[in-house]
Length: 289
Image (tube, rainbow, N blue to C red; front, side, top):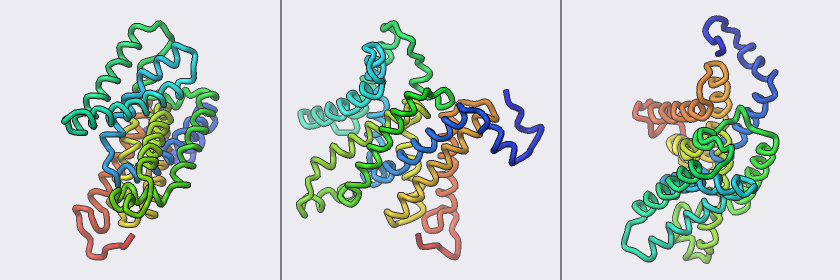
């Protein structure tokens, strides 16, 4: 266990961990995934898809287990089951009178339970704790390459369709009225969500990845009314949270995923309290962001 309180040298605190290759990989991957999830979280916040993010992140678990059992990349199985869970949610919603939030709860808990059963029955070297809570400090080079590829695809989708997605998330009815194909945008956004959930598995795991997909956008939403500023603030806060969380977990010997999410939550609480226009502690001079 690392000693944090005996010797306090700020420069040493920052530099010493970088002497380890696993820390350099963890910082790079965590910052990358944090930035991608921060960008996507802005669209999730506008769309009100917090529950959908929860559903996708939990539903990928059986896909991970089956992919490992078949010798396939875990990201492939996770993506298939993530998209499949969303398709199943849409099908049940259309064919029954059950409300969407109830359907989401039914599907993601069912998929998650299936994943737990498969882990207990399929003989493999899958570490359940690794799936649930992530392990950026132990990420392999092959997983780094997968995360880089997934992150590039998600960012490409969000940047190419930025304006259409923003309008779709803000007002889908208006987007349809001006001729935008909202059906395609719907599934593009869901695909980006599934891919981001897969990338987040490496850093915070299934349980906490929903926080990375929601908290940065919610934090930025309290700080500004402009979407461009919102995306910038969300990405910056998410990257900082990831880097600080990895450092804190290294020096205090705590779970890395939990550390990252706690830092994100702290940033949200600070915005909730002190946001210039929307914080509960008001200031005389508000800043227009």
